[in-house]
Length: 537
Image (tube, rainbow, N blue to C red; front, side, top):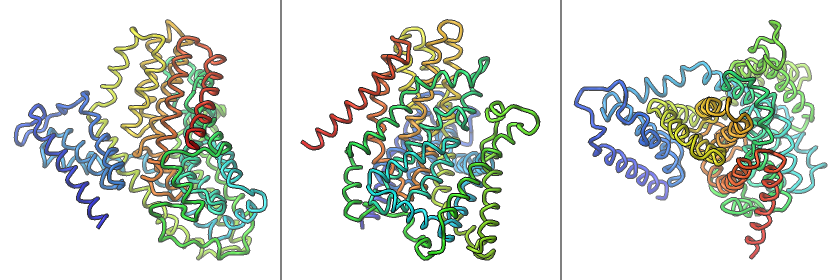
């Protein structure tokens, strides 16, 4: 009955939204006519589709239908409410288009291969062996969470890789110490994009460097690291939450239930999957470590290969010019090959059993692939409506009047844009060129601060957004219900964003990280202590 009620609510809300949009005569197209440029192009209406999807997801706790309704609203706005062309646009300009994009397909290939590797490690007993090893060395819930953070920090190459690898390795450990899957998903998500955005050797550094036209992109990226307050303060907050044992909001409920044996609180979307690692007793820790290390090494080699390293390009330049999608696909393939050969050589798994693990791993990634496909499609709808141009015009208009407050304003704009579109990299591409154009010749130091604000805001919005691919990957890595992950993480991300906003105001006036960063760290610790005292009251 409860499921039917939620489904009815979703349908009624969607119908009301479509009817209300349909009544807006400003967007009504003549029968049988489709405008080349939507009437809603580069207007506030361009942000409506992702807002609809996000609000519905948070209300109904159902992500698939919410994303699809957001896509439907976007298609209607793109086609000026012509029903026939809207339906065609959902598939031809949306789902089929994003699944035909080489970069997106490469990411899906990487996910499938990684799912197969996780299945292999489970069947070989590597995960169980690591769990037994960790059980003798990690004695407490705090230790399990800190170990998750440390592993997340060490895997800084790529956020997708980080999410799925840390999740598969640490799930048995955190489960044993009764850490909720929602908390695990938060720890994974908070050590994915926030770590990658302050790591000079990562796919994110390469992306940001490419958006800084006419400047030394990598040098600017390194100089911006001390000003990337959201990333740094998120790490401080994460460690503080674990050490101080300070959980609040809906996460506190999840953690309380986990200590009573309920790791999921509501539903387990992966309940039908077979847990095989406990059945295998012959596995060793190296059956987990060797595949993981092989995967890391192969992915790094794959990325620098796509950047031309083996054609004479230096390492840093090759990494900056790399194609993460192709590099991760190639690297993960060779990582899978090494894993299969090793297991067969050690007679841990037969060739037939290894082949059976591949479709099993694919099946495990289906929920994440579905959400990613819908999220990419929703982004395509938003791009078609010119949301980026609308936001860019707002930022450009405020550049002259609020100079010292501009880093804080850019941070908020980046948060909102990344939250609405679900993409950090797209936000970089919109805001960073504007900042470079505005400040490169007048105030270079403020340009560095503003670029870091672009990056921090993009990561913050991406961190909060339920349609972000990184958020989706964190849910998949922790095998946590996606809406549960979003709703429990949001209060934490909002606090980190608020402290970061204040810190950017300080940075805008002080224009030195030696003043602003210590202020931000002290403020974050003070906020955590205050929250802990209030939660005890």
